Amino acid sequence: AQSVSQHNHHVILSEAASLELGCNYSYGGTVNLFWYVQYPGQHLQLLLKYFSGDPLVKGIKGFEAEFIKSKFSFNLRKPSVQWSDTAEYFCAVNAEGGGADGLTFGKGTHLIIQP
Amino acid sequence: GAGVSQSPSNKVTEKGKDVELRCDPISGHTALYWYRQSLGQGLEFLIYFQGNSAPDKSGLPSDRFSAERTGGSVSTLTIQRTQQEDSAVYLCASSPRQGGFLYNEQFFGPGTRLTVL
Image (tube, rainbow over all chains, first blue to last red; front, top):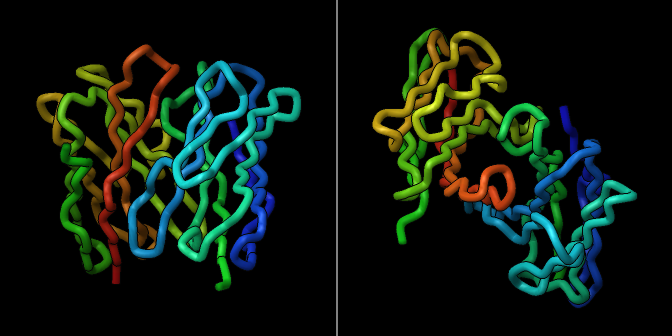
């Protein structure tokens, strides 16, 4: 079965700082990759997704992620964060032939942006 | 359009009681998923329905957990003889599941917060 690792559990940044959140997965086959965000008191929302094609994907609110197949990574980036980006971020994967069709999530990264 | 809806939003129950949680997927979505979000375990996949096929129950933590999906739409997750470790937020998601495995984007509901006393 596949697994997902998010290396940073808590990240604190100042506004305008650059952000990179790490995500690695373990599965050798074809995968769909996602980043979801959960703002305080709100439900999970899709930030961006990778299915196939260009490994650099752009999502909402200025976020982007790069799929590096050789490193089994899908890191999330934003060049300049805002206070409103304070939230929990989850990396997720589902794998073709990996068994269940459900998503496997990382443990999440709690991001706090200080004004 | 309307998103995934879940009810109730909060449920408090006593240990040993049965509970039912409801999910209304986005209209037209053929795939429906249940997940559990807890502090200790993070987000865990529970069960998956695709159309009228038999559900994939591989993520259910015990035989106290069951789910059904009536008419290919609304789903109910039932937990029998609840235990304190069942306390969590139960999330439902749906997907149009077009194109098979690829392009399988899931849309999440707001969840039901279950507290077992």
